[in-house]
Length: 334
Image (tube, rainbow, N blue to C red):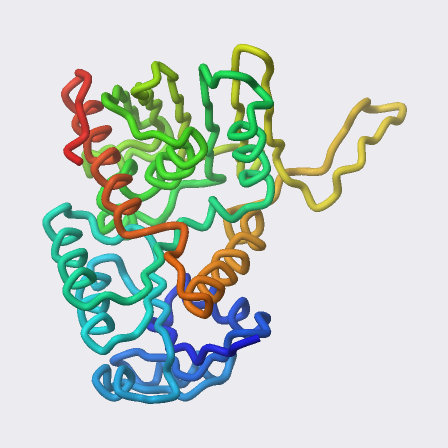
């Protein structure tokens, strides 16, 4: 297996997700961890290995760095994409590309001018259950797809500073569901309708954002897609999908550490609580996403989650935001 030396850009939460996954993959080698603050980079290399660096030009000129993983704050993604593309380095970038379509277009121009393999980190595509449901739909198990539904509820609201920088609930969270369901359906909506409310954290409402939303996407085929999001959920990280067609239906179930059903004098059909958050529920998907990136780079094919997918998902998310705020159906600006 060909080994790729990686530069991990950033040392925040997502970098700590990818560090262990890189080390677990036999075809990936963590060569460098980059942060403009060298002390932060050094702390991360103490955990995961590699060399700490604070000079971006030196990182991208390093012949031991075959590709970069961008796990930095969203508002820095475009700058790093441009720099890495000009240096000829394949790129894996956390979602979203950016919160602005204009800046996304800037990144896509850089990728056209300096063609390198590029993959966007829509990790939920690489969850085994989600991938199996897609395969069931695409192979015709449910017949013609009529409705596709997603429940995505987080255990508790994030810190308000995170909310302020997130770009809004649709761009921050719903965009995962948008990309996943469009990927499953094999089409993108011609029209979106959405509603939002703030029921759990008044600070989020004070920022003119939502902590609970319902979204409907109308597909060119006539299929309807429903996305049910919440920033709070008393029983854990609720993640389910359902595909309904004219000959059947398939669903994914929530994950638990222990899936045994228990019966005793106090309870029947009792189950353990759900996985707590995305780090636990989607743990395998991050490894699988990096495996896809490795395979795409080493076999010279286009990664399966592209910049074009990222732009489309953002356009849909922004249309959902407009629909929720203005109370009308909106056509995404692809």
